[in-house]
Image 1: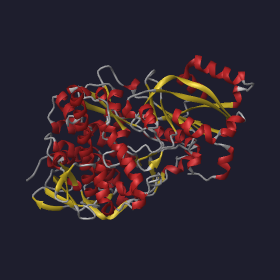
Image 2: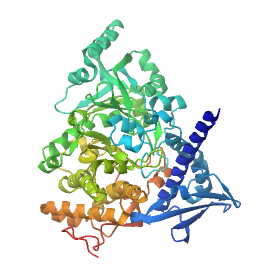
Image 3: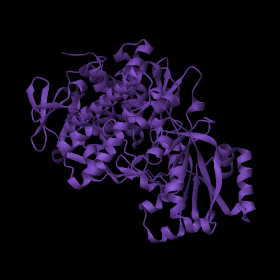
Image 4: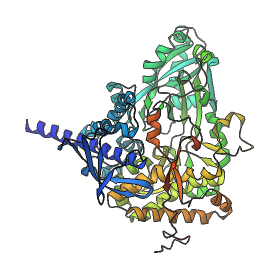
Length: 602
């Protein structure tokens, strides 16, 4: 009996710890976005009052560079009517929702997303909790399924609205499971299939399915009196088929315009980017990304045939443009290309909807290269998001990696920046290409805990192309963007510095691994080295200044609260999402930090 009570108490303690962690993040991120304005009652001690002034939250925090609030999780206290009560992330949002600008009618849905987010860490079974020290030497997919932090800026980042509890257990990445995809055949005239120039439809299917599965699918169609040459095959997420496509397209199924072929021969593990699946049976085969009509972190996660027919073409163009670049090769930097895509257009719904409609995003898939064939036996793959991961004991994974490497923390960060910051900045300044370089979109290659190179993914849907290159195909024009020179540097200052390096600096600082000021001095040194390595880009460095004194902030949580189903239009200019009234001070702009030779000055 006592063991059962102890286990229950330990579980409650872990849930309370994760609840408190999200509560601290609510304070940190909404203070960063200036939605909350705590009262400083003593040095580094703050108080927040609820909307009705009946509840107060007290906490200890350091305000770091980029308005980054390093909140002590254990310091957060909730006091109501003079008595201390347990800290709850959900209660905190209810207490503060008016200050946060959450309309009362929108509050329940946001709370649903928040409850699910807390559960990612809090409700994990003991056998699926892995310590940071173990993860530092773990395999690629063990790291992937062990993540609990989600997007570093969004608070409610694990909503998965539309999934039941059973679905979460079956299909959510933190559940650690795997499953077969469902393959269907669709009349070819209802489909858009596209591939990169060196990929054919037949070769793709043979690579992904193998000869035996293809023969079985062939026989399924023949048995029903159908000609396989009249159909295009595509994989579907099992939830998407059961909950969405099979009902929505019942008429097409009855008319045999859509035919179920059977399960994939291989099993797939869901990734943090939840509609992307990794082949755990044959890891050298491609990732498969499929439409998934659930709401998660500001978007409904469908995929349209309109995008699928151009995604591989964009990948082809990016590969031609940068694939042979000597500097990127010297860094070991690579991209995982989306080699092929297919989208189904239901004749009824296509006729009555416009591009962008969720009814055009129900049945699509793309294939992305796997990183597994690109590493040697002494190298380790890890999502870059792992650098922000803190385990159930409160230990950061980045600290375990630094310890494993045997390097000083600042030297480890210097090497990391060379693998991550330098190629992303180079793509922007040399080729005028901006990607989405957040933690889930980068895969690190590590050797003995040291980052040695990086691999970028999500090319076709995320790339922004500037200045209308003459060789850009007409079908790729959706990737064009028109940011002015004045904000072009946000591809680094906002997307890299604020979105990823800011939370990384906070993890290092809070855990005594590297002081925030020293972290940004290392970043400044790294940027100076990068600029010095490319004197031919001096005019662009001047126009798109990486050392600008300040830059406009993007309030990501505010965007999500404004519309959690379509936060922004994909590919939309920064002009529509910046808060021009909120300027962040650039932490590497201070000339006292460092000079171009890397000599620190007082």
